[in-house]
Image (tube, rainbow, N blue to C red; front, side, top):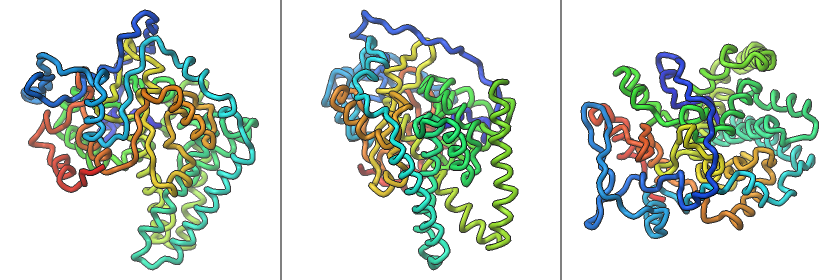
Length: 443
């Protein structure tokens, strides 16, 4: 759900152009149903007495793989998949989807009612977000200092609901009136100082190229050449993809949405209108807050809830598509159905978070079809479980899941999907070692 965060030069040096690998999508084979693009044999494997796996060897910062006899593929071994679930913090790791299944095949199994827009339910979600946000503001105003973190957590989660409403508007799944969607989407994003149209254009690309290496606009793995480009950038990447990762959406927001040059000519006018709205909100809203409450009030009432929103923005998008067994594929190997069904994670959070955030983490059906309104996602997911259940990746939020993402899912490797920073630069990976020590390791 974002500009390409893994394009990590933004951390200190700002964005730079990457090689364009084109927009090719290889045709799906109708004759190779026994061959899977998700290479389960490429998962990090444990060495057993009977079999050995891919062994990573570090040599002055270069990650290489030595091919030896490979352990039985977890795709064919339910017991091994269950072991990986325990290791990664998942409830279920899905089997690879056959090559001959298309995205249309999956969409056609969904009931038509999940695509229907219900105005009452849509505006109820707006009422829920406005009410919960107003309650959060009241809590911040009245809470003693030692309860402010709880008030900020509530308000940051509530304002994340504003983002989800704008998200539905961008996908044309909120209202039958497109002008209403554009206006409401812009207004919903304003408290977040998020330009609506620039985000919409970038987000559409994320859906079109989910988990496509270099092309997806959210959480690509770090490329080894980026990691080795300079010592300062390497350290910044380690911190950015380690302890600061739950707030890295701030960098995505700043780098990817305010530069008009990043958009096509036919998009520029709409981008400029969104930017003007955001700057007007900042020019009027911020001074009013400071005038009424002072700088401390600006921090209490705006900045801290905003940081809470970015925590959820980063965490949700990270969990949606990042795991050791979920690969990013180059365009010539990419398969839409596999990327959207196998490459997306359903994660359950506590009920109050699900309610305030309008079920955005019921995320697999949203990637099967973004036209499904948020209030129909659970019905759509139930249908997917009934028809495609064995292919789904599912989890309940837990510390081991987060620990795995923050300490393992770092550098791109074609065979293993990810190589941890510790294998490539162990002497510089103290932040990762620190996370391993302090983060609970239970699911």
